[in-house]
Length: 290
Image 1 (cartoon, helix red, strand yellow):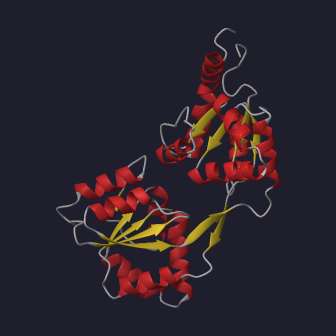
Image 2 (cartoon, rainbow, N blue to C red):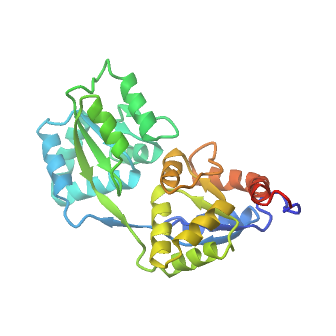
Image 3 (cartoon, helix red, strand yellow):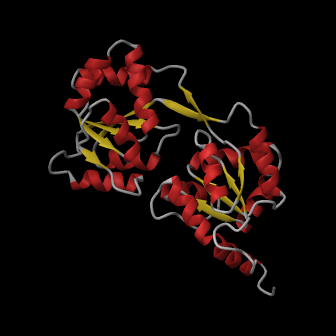
């Protein structure tokens, strides 16, 4: 590995982005990498929006104290669901009366679009830990004990967040708006699984924990789960941030790096800067006599 040039230097880089697949492929290529992009996610609206509509009605009756928005996509989807039910303006008016928490810049931007003020913006890296700590810091203004808290969810529930809120005495209502599914066309993802299993990838980038889940799910279906896990331990694993790194840990994997800011551009640039060094260290520890 001694000949690796600055940047990716021709390393084969797997990304599992869906909506921003062309963008990440360009970033990798411009940073000297050979991109392999295989979308791993599809956002699917829930067949029934009963929970979302029930939440909207409770909010308008003044029965919700704090609303936590976890994603920009989910925030917009919730507004859309309520709009289809014909109560958009009364819903937004009620939301403006509640204490609104935005987990990061994406829900913040979505709330700004509908003129909903944010009471609490969660600092980077925007995990459930920062969210709970930020709420704790505002306890004099809004104690969680006895508070009625609604949490807009994104695909899967965050048990740590929900447990942390309940431990603090909050009455928690989950508001699922959409869930994650595999792409309708999983052939690119199956090709990526094969490439990883054969050791044809040098570095993989995960920008959400569900990419980890779906990559390994497809590997399991292809009877390549063990081979993929083994290959991943020999590759550089770049994670967008702590939440994604925690999902990797659940599967016995460790992130080799996280960017200084949990954004795709930072991830690609900083991975390119460190890829050669990380890969050399990883492979030299695997083959110490070489």
